[in-house]
Length: 165
Image (cartoon, rainbow, N blue to C red; front, side, top):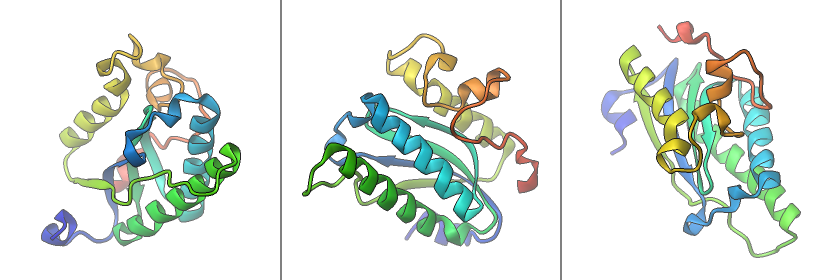
């Protein structure tokens, strides 16, 4: 039984989501592929009216903090994002038999401000923990720069998460 069923989650929710590349291949080290993923994340979020509160695209997985007006839309959002991004990467790589994403994803419903702060810090510091960079704002495909400076990114971040209360 999923956590959301145990908690009887519905309605407006802030959710921490992780999804991983098939076989943990570090495809997102390729900046062109990582950019496709970032652009598709932004496009899918716009279509589904999902707020991206934080994200990081790592070499072989992605972490997202998503604000949803209706939690029940999360599976449709994830399925659409994965399907569309997979097609675009497949086209770029010019391959036929290709699977970008593992089938499953992990999600955690955030119910407390403290949980949110912990998860956002985890997302932004992931490249530092993996020794890919020294400072979170130096990772190109992350919301850290938008949270810690006035810079913008190709992914639109919603820093006004007060609507979840």
